[in-house]
Length: 364
Image (tube, rainbow, N blue to C red; front, side, top):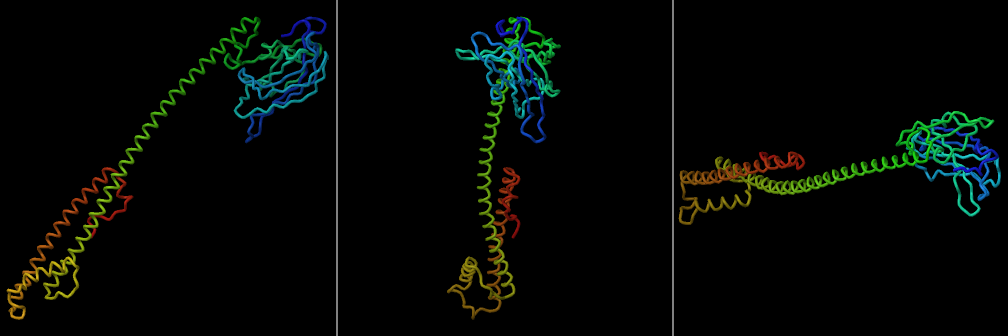
């Protein structure tokens, strides 16, 4: 706050600063929202108290009432000067995501440096980004520290105050309550407390929403793990059924091959010849049957008549046809079981047979 010793001459004369400021939006594709250019020219009626020997101007950006510490910049110290000539330029780079509306403000404050160490804020002024878009230029009064965070008060060359520029920020945006004039410190403190309470309530609501979201994520994760375990079990069952089905398909192919050999043998016996080579199982079966017909106790083939030879052939054909019928019955049983296995695979996984690319159970 300013005291009477910081004023020049008349106690009603307040310090003023002559500044120029403008806002330039960033180009498309740039990583910034925009830039703020400030030129601090000079000051008037700036007299430090008896405990200080220098004054300087500090500038920074605030958003929704919160100062962005990484944006703070200051002028050089000016010792014992009532009308210091600053003539310093500053550029503020507004990062992407920073709103270019009335929530973002340029804060300009006047400070005095004590001889004993430390600094004290004498007051300040502030400008919103929309005000800076229209370019700010001229003399501005140094308001008290709290009032200056929300307002700026231009003056003419003679020092007469012009209509004050006030912000249209809401209670939650400004950080200091109503945009109306703050006549008493008690009201200002009350508005600050209300603002802090609103911020705490907003943070509590945000934390509660985040907690609910975390619980939902945990539930989804548990459900996903259960689905993965069920899928692994299904894949193991499908693999087992595929192996079992492949074994039965291989056995069916063996029986089909044996049936073909039996049918060829029967056809040759009917034609009166048995010249083609036979597989080992069928050759063993035929040898056993021939031994039964050509037993040592029976007549030799040379002594048999034509009727006896035909009777022997008919007996051998009947034996082979019986075994062929048994083989066909076994193939039907295997086909039925294979069909049930495929139905079970389709029930467990409709795409199992398509991915497996297995042969059809009815294929020879």
